[in-house]
Image (tube, rainbow, N blue to C red):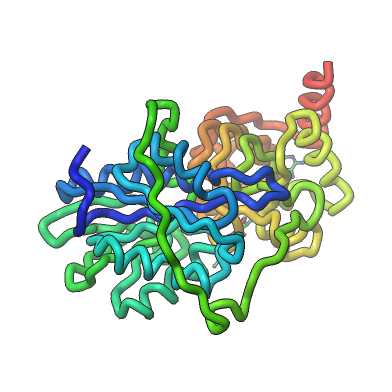
Amino acid sequence: MAEAGTGGVLIVGEMAAASAGGGLRPAAFELVTAGRAVAAGLGTSLIGLLFGTGAGDAARAWGAAGIDRVLVVEDDRLDGAPAQAATVAVARAVAETQPRVVLIPGTTAGRDYAPRLAARLDVGLAADCIALAVDASGLVATRPIFGGRVQTDVRFPESRPQVATVRPGSFDKADASAGAGPEPEPLDVELGPDDLHVTIRELRAADRGAAGLADARTVVAGGRGLKEPDNFRLVEDLAGVLGAAVGASRAVVDAGWRPHHEQVGQTGQTVAPRLYVAVGISGAVQHLVGMQGADYIVAVNRDPDAPIFKTASFGIVGDLFEVVPAITQALRG
Ligand SMILES: Cc1cc2nc3c(=O)[nH]c(=O)nc-3n(C[C@H](O)[C@H](O)[C@H](O)COP(=O)(O)OP(=O)(O)OC[C@H]3O[C@@H](n4cnc5c(N)ncnc54)[C@H](O)[C@@H]3O)c2cc1C
């Protein structure tokens, strides 16, 4: 590993809410993979920052995934990464480590505090990146534009540091079982009243199915092919036997069949499960950008020319009202 010092790559981890079991969110390990590659390209070290309750213990496992130096702020006022306080904490870590690049998870919280951090540091921000590279100008951040139809490479060499948010599911998770990591270093962060106008006192899943959609290992999602809201029980039943979270296309969310927090896609959640089952979903590009990071995609659609079949690992051409109950029944045994 490169020696840890100034000019490194700083990655910011994220803890799951206590109600979701606590610990590190998968996005934290994806940033290790992303950050290590950028650090190697720049010939520099990888530094991690973790804050909130339990950050110290979590930082050991995180560091073992391949981080050279890990800073921790054990402060429950940073739980859930409230934007103002998180901005102060990351800015403090930037002042401490003088990194060349800062990578922030493109989660709900990260998307909130990253622009504030960039404004505070008076530097550029590349948002929602799906790939990262390094050339003579420094970081090259690839991000989708025009609803995901086009990808653009962003270079902003005059920025120091170069700040980017990384879309969850865009990188493989680094393996934390590699051995011992560095001893976490406490970082002092002063939070004044002005930094605490917003504090997150509790994070709660809104209702069944919403819990952990972004981090779920299995997702069963339904679309307009279900014809009417009550038929979503077919999706819920299959999700139930698979232990999966329920997702939805925008068409059914806009129709008021499902809550927005279940929407997968460009204007909804990005998911990267092991298995994604798409039921009666056509596969519009705006939906695909939210789920194409799944390891396996199974699509059920009666139209053999539906675009979803171009992305699916396994396709079932058939009537979902016959196919889905049959799968659920078979799995119930
Ligand atoms: C700026 C912008 C942002 C957007 N963001 C999102 C987003 O975040 N997420 C998102 O999902 N969409 C998004 N969209 C909308 C997107 O373009 C599509 O309109 C939407 O994804 C379509 O939803 P759908 O697949 O459920 O419906 P449809 O496109 O109507 O597809 C329904 C499918 O069901 C199949 N079907 C019908 N009956 C049966 C049956 N009995 N058995 C099996 N299959 C059947 C049909 O063959 C069809 O393929 C966005 C659009 C725009 C312009």
